[in-house]
Length: 190
Image 1 (cartoon, rainbow, N blue to C red):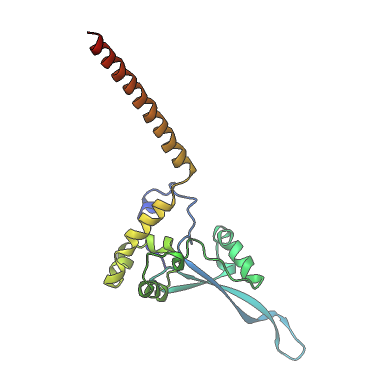
Image 2 (image 1 turned 135 degrees about the vertical axis):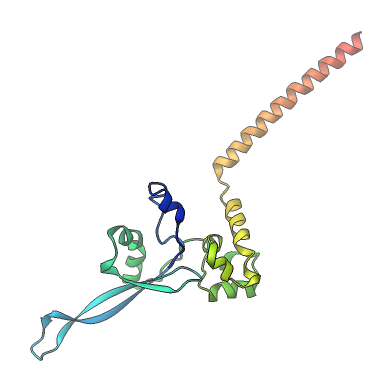
């Protein structure tokens, strides 16, 4: 499973709404089992479906949990993906697929895919033991992924703030130019 989140343990009220499966690859599997409460006349039992949720944090082992054994909060977090699976649709990847990251060489991409990574966010979240277990050629990529996501995170509010700063700077430059012009005129008169 994922690494221990010491920050959450030390500060239990902070990040309480952080998704538990944020960087996990999620798959669902159905297995058919005998329903012991519904015997048939021929001595066999009716079959019922049991759903297993396969949770894989990249670079870690896969963990399987029965859907009906998950907490309500966990089921709520995975409900949209479960609904997609129930309809037979492909489960959408949560995050920016690494296949869309043009700075990554094909060989590096293939190494990350084999290790279970699907998104740039998953690579950016690598820390601790997972990072030390990575092959040397992959260890520099978490830092690059974080920088990429930070750069991609610049939104309209940041653009508006920078535009305001630019307008203020232009006003200040205009005031300085006016003062300089006035000083030059005074120097010419004297």
